[in-house]
Amino acid sequence: MNDRVRLPDWLELAEADTEPWPAPLDDDGPTVMPLTWDRGPDRLWGTYERAERDHYALAEAIDWSELRPDDHSPEERLGLAYWFAMHGSFESAGVLTFARALIAAFEAREHDAVRRMLVTVTRDENHHDEMAMRVCRAMVPGFPDTMTPATELERAAMRNIAWVQARINHYWRGYLAAHDRYRFGTIVSAFAAGEAAGTFMFGQLGQDSTHPVLRDLMRLVARDESRHFSLATHLMRRYLPIISAEEQTAVLKNLVGSYAYFSVFMDEPNELFWGQLPDGWLGWHQRLEEHARGTGLAVPDTAGRRELWRAAFLRVKSIVDEVGLDFPAIPELDIDGQTLAITPEDVLVAAL
Image (cartoon, rainbow, N blue to C red; front, side, top):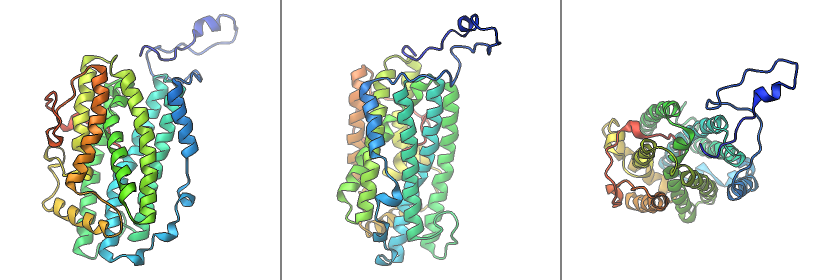
């Protein structure tokens, strides 16, 4: 890319030394050296410093003693565990997604602020996955990975999660392949939709949830997601104008694909992307979410979620409009734009 850090001229340096030097690498290939601390834009560096100030240890940031299983019915406990296991499935994938992007940032000789921000995002995704683990272990020990289901509702909950995780694994493999096909700027420009949706969704959950532990967890996630979105918007503004027309189309297709990918958790499952879900999946999913609401977690209904999605995509659309590209149409959210034929292979991300 135009403003990436350049390697020093190894051959010129080597002429002044009698000891043998490593052969110079292809300047356009992936490298992790030399060490460079060109920190990049001040605003993004400020976001990184805010991430460091915001850093928290979950064991200390939350009063876990207030999350009391005995305060809830068995169905409510399972519903809450189910919701967090679904959330954790995406967050666990997010740890690896951003870790891989971090490697790509070093290989692309990115600014220090971008690299360090990706470290913090990876750490945040790990925190969010840990939240899911802690809630699941408190509410239904062993769920969803090691328990033996004893009721029809437990079997349905475990089956639903297993199906989603199998499909996420499919998208993870596609994400890895995308790194071989596209440059760093294209990959990271695709993150914005998920981060925008996360900012709006978890912000609403943090505002409306009544249980103190669940409210505080959602507020932490929302704060993290807002920083992630700040990084994503910086990268979109930076790279969308200079990547190729083919890569621009890939990013725009991914915006629609992101909505379809996250629809299983944040809307109703998109048939093209989640059509392989077994009969009854959605009915059990809605029933379990209703049980989760009984614990004080303010899970929005489908209409509420679509309002949040629409607000998130309109925010992303404003950035695409700045760049001068045609935003893709998303009929489900009443967003007009360019009609793009997409397939599951157009999803470039596997994170939230």
